[in-house]
Length: 197
Image 1 (tube, helix red, strand yellow):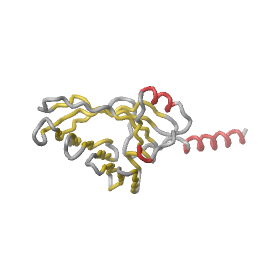
Image 2 (cartoon, helix red, strand yellow):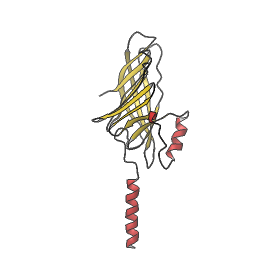
Image 3 (spheres, one colour):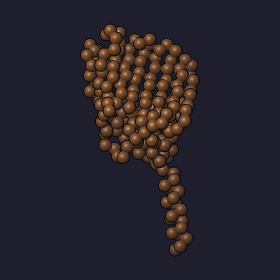
Image 4 (cartoon, helix red, strand yellow):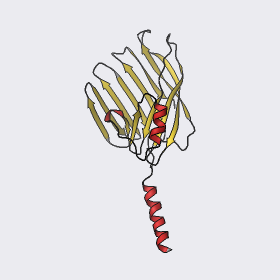
């Protein structure tokens, strides 16, 4: 009987150590959507200069696994005075305790179900990593250069192309997404949004 108890305790410890420890930059206590207001600017060829842009950003945990979680971040209720309404597609992220990885499939919702059933996270391409838990990472896939760096309680992702295209994502410990910006060409079209305090 004593050996069975010891084996049970050891098995419990092994299972606990093999489970997802939670990423410090993108995590949630449950599957309930979390909403936050973002403010910033947008620009494009149709308007002169930058104009104000606001959005409601909704973060939802879609799945939890022993190795991580999968999240969807939607930008809703985009408002500006631009003649053409901007549409920003939802972002899906596979999250482990060490990385935040963009899920970029043709049908992300179907991919979420498939990945959530996996016993281990899928293999990641370096270009799809949008966040790390610590340190600094630099990846070059010319003409793209991507830098990810943890600075205090922030993780900053910046990917840029020599033509002027860029994407910037900033994560904050215990908060999640606090900044999202993207632009095409030499200021031809883009936006910057930051979480309101």
